[in-house]
Image 1 (cartoon, one colour):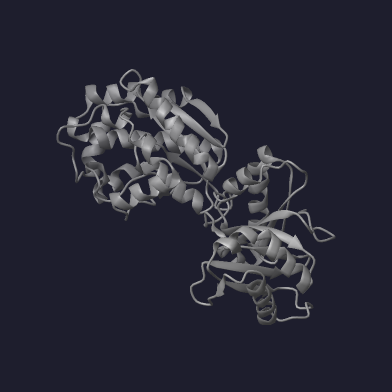
Image 2 (tube, one colour; image 1 turned 90 degrees about the vertical axis):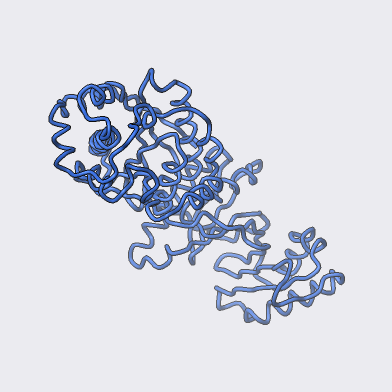
Amino acid sequence: MSYVPSAPPVGDEIFLLKMGEMVLKGLNRRTFEERLMGNARRRLQKYGKFRIYSRQSITYVEPKEAGCDMDGAFATLSRLFGVVGLSRAKACEKTPEAILETAKTYLHDDLMAARTFKVESKRSDKTFPMTSIQLSQYVGGELNEAFPHIQADMHHPELTVHVEVRDFAAYVHGDPAPGAGGLPVGVGGKAVSLLSGGIDSPVASWMMAKRGVALEMVHFFSYPYTSPEAKDKVLTLAQLLTPWCGRLTVHVVPFTKIQEQLRLHCPEALFTLLMRRFMMRISERVAQRVGAHGLITGESLGQVASQTMEAMAVTGQVCTLPVFRPLVGMDKEEIVRTARKIGTFETSILPYEDCCTVFTPRHPKTHPKLEEITEAEAALDIEALVEEAVQGIERVVLDP
């Protein structure tokens, strides 16, 4: 059961988390809210003790003790999927006088720095004696007298003073910060994401987490052709995703033997496609182990030779689970822009090789036929190679 206070948390600074599309979920809405609050509780543990509850499409986060790291908590909540906007707010009694005094003191520095302002009020508690417009007019007029240098501007104010009169208290805050959006991680099920050391796959993972998907990561490591530094780079990328995605397990798959067998027995032009088919088979085995119901790749249509329609059809053909390709319609500039936003770009461009670049064919096949792929694979003991790779997996658990 979520906590609901019996008295207003008057006098404390708290966080107000605004939900987005979650409010449209009908009978399932409470499930989404519970997941959001659970995710918030786990993320905030290292910042102190907080009381978290949901009411009237708002999730409230109150410090339960002195000394909570409010700055760290706020930064963490800004990366919490399911929240479209968040504010640091001051709670007060539900009287016009208390609301005005709180606005004067709590937003004093903002009011001194601004040249124009307006007041926006929301009255969720309909027993409050003033309408939203009346409350805005009262608070705005009094603030204008208390801070005579600042002028009212209803259209393009430098500062908006927000007043919310809700069930347990009134809350005053400035302009809300944007949240991460999307849906709480976990409400969309679980999927396995193929994580390389490049720019694309971390972005694809982040995009699916934003849709509420809990992630397990798979990385293919070809020592000694790829260095320990290359593996560390990928683990760093996964670590950079944890503030958004929560705890992640990276399944590091030994891939050297499979690549050497491809080089010995298969046509060079098909190396990349055959390699990716093995990756999909192994990832699906990992998915079966962890109870995941889909695979995620960073493929973008036409970006490289193995990402034509025909090539993606051939590599996906070995899977029974759905394969999600969230970047398929994005160009490189859009992907890079997102990588910069989520903080993975600078690590992704570090000059360490990954297994996909080890045996790159000089003239890769771009429009393969399934028949020629299966003919090439006939020279390999596919099941034995997959099983050996799965048995050799190393698991690395990363916390935010």
